[in-house]
Length: 184
Image (tube, rainbow, N blue to C red; front, side, top):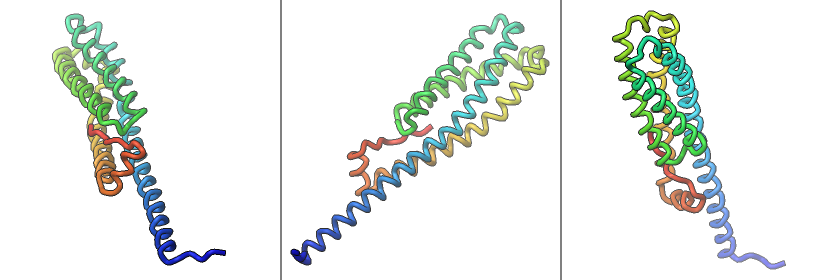
């Protein structure tokens, strides 16, 4: 039975340390990427609640606001853009271009929503409807929670990006195709 030399033992020890480091770094990146996905789930739940409030609110407001159909349709179209962007980001929450498209869609949604809310203030007959009041209350509840959920997502993305940029972990990001996470 051949006996290993000190150099062979040292090479084996360095290789073992390297393998253990690679496994640990890979697992850390996977865990951080998973945290981004979990943070996005909270955003997605709130987006669904917002959508569940917007659609009936628009349906409730349509009969009383015949001259404002364009604004209502724009709000629904913007909401659909957000939904499409969220669906894409849900599948790959660590893709920076998908996060950017979500940011763009959210900006359009915010602008259209602000316009419709201003128009609703000019139509007290709509605000007097119990269904409209209920859905507006839901929107007022969801919006600050959505801001907080986005911050949690951004924090998770920043932690992941920082870990992925560290040397020598950045070598693994290229090897295994870990991308850069975008911010919302």
